Amino acid sequence: MTEGASLAAARAAEREFRWAEAAGAFRVVATESGDPAALEGLAQCAWWLDDGTLCLEAREAAYRSYRDTGDALCAARAATSLAWDSLLFGQGASVAQGWLGQARGLLEGEPEKREHGWVAVREAELAHASGHDPAESLEPARQAAAIGRRHRDPDLEQAGLALAGLALVGSGEVASGMELLDAAVVAATSGDVRDPMWRGKICCWLIAACVQAQDVERAAEWCRRMAAVSERQGLLPLFNVCRVRYAELCILRGDWVEAEQDLSAAIERLVSSRRDTRLSAVAQLGELRRRQGRQQEAEKLLRQAEFVPEARVSRALLVLERGDPGASWRAIEEVLAETPQAAQLDRAAVLPSAVVVALAAGHPAAAASAAAELQTIAARIGTDRLLGQASAATGRVAADVGAWRIAVRHFSRAGLRFDEAEARCGLGEALLAGGTADEANEHLERARAIFDEIGAPHRVAAVRAVAERRSAGLLTGRQIEVLSLVARGLTNGEIARELHLSEHTVHRHLSNSFTSLGVSSRAAATAYALSHGLVDHTAGKGGLRGG
Image: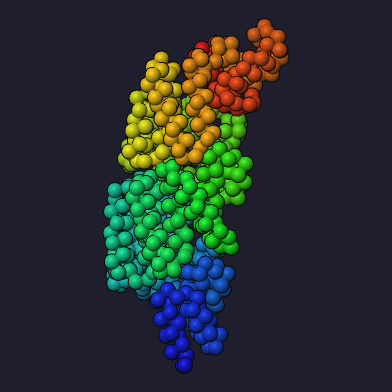
């Protein structure tokens, strides 16, 4: 077989998604002839086989070969691909930007060609992946689409349009962004986009936008469709991304058995992968374990994914559940400080937890500010989950029964079982505080049933404890007095002197409070009392609530 025929055979196998066979054929041609086109083909097959080391080695070899022979355009193309692959396979943003700089330098002074558009695509991708202001990715994405249109390159044009749509969604312009993404996905799935990588990426960006906007049902439908296509065609990286995304949605909907199966399988498949998808799967499994009340397993998993934003929020909630609201609030503050105001949907993913933690840590003003910001975003986006989260935040901050009712309605309509149960629990507590016991107990019982059904036994116990505590008057006035002073950091001896009691009596009041609240430590009792409005963070005898 001639060299040309060998290369043609490799490309034929690649077109039919026979990645291992194609990689072997490209390797033979590259070894025998050093043809940089064969090296590029080998790199792309390695990309699909999730072999990051081979992908980068072959791509760099192709770049050097093109550069050494003076083929600036092809060298720029290889450098442009290396910009994203370097980030994807764990070499970091600085290396990625270095390769992008090489590509720009090679194209400098050249009349506009498709290669300029692909550099703009990678600029937009890197800006999006960096987590900074999504507006940074909007302009290069639009440039890429325009260049693709001028040069009649549908892959380039649609990739640019999809990235522009993703940037708009991230900025809160959901309707405009989704319009661009929908159009790009239609082009990708109807055959206008030729490269399977870009077809897959465009669909993945639509799923990412749906998840960001918390459009749960739409995201789930696209995950199912893309996972089926990816599995059928052997597009393993896209299949893994879709399954992890789908598992995330299953967690929200309370389909925890399915979520666990998908995440465990993804982690096993990605055990040697250098892609971020593995860490996302680990973070999601950690959050599932937290919701299940399996704290030690959750901690272990979340530590593995410590730099993934959602893992950082999950760990903050785990710290709160263990009775350290101060440390939890510091962690949440850090995440919010690193998330630009313009990245509205990224902030919306953190704000519900910020409200819970701020209240527990004794920062009611911060909680109110977070709730107000969430309300603004939710009103603009209008998806049920965001509207439910915003209403729940208002319910927590203002003890507003009406807001809790709205939250229950939105979560129920979206099929978000865990969120619905949490909101029903909040509504039940608010109703009990207002003396409406019959309706309160109805919501608490429905919350208990949901938690029991989805597999959250610790939350079942917590709901039962709420009903029992409330029916018994929650805490006595003296117990609340003692907890108020605990919240100020006083020791048992100091509390005894303040209230003119013996230390033994103080200890007994605390022990009885622990039993009533269903907790086992001073920190946990304080966290519960603060988060449920039983005491003020700075309260002493004059700042008590309830009784």
